[in-house]
Image 1 (cartoon, rainbow, N blue to C red):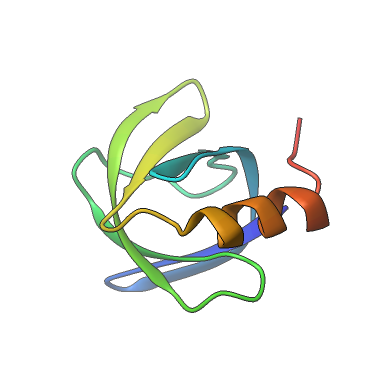
Image 2: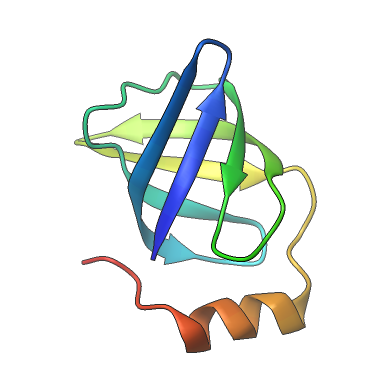
Length: 86
C-alpha cells in the first residue's frame, strides 16, 4: 500500500506503508526527511486525508499517529484490499 504525505511546503506520493493500525502507520520515508512532532496529512487509498503527527523517525522509517482512530470497517477493508510494503 502506498500513501501520499502532505505538510507545509511539501507533497510526497508513493510513500510505502509498512504497517497499519487503527491509530496510525509506519512508513518507509524514502527521499522524504520527516521530523518528530511534524504535522502532516496522510492520504491512504480511497480515504480522505487524515490529519496526523510524526511520532518518531529512525533508520529510514517513521511512525505516524492519526488524530482520530480509523474505523474498524475501514481498517479491515484497507488490509484486505492492499498489500503492506516489506
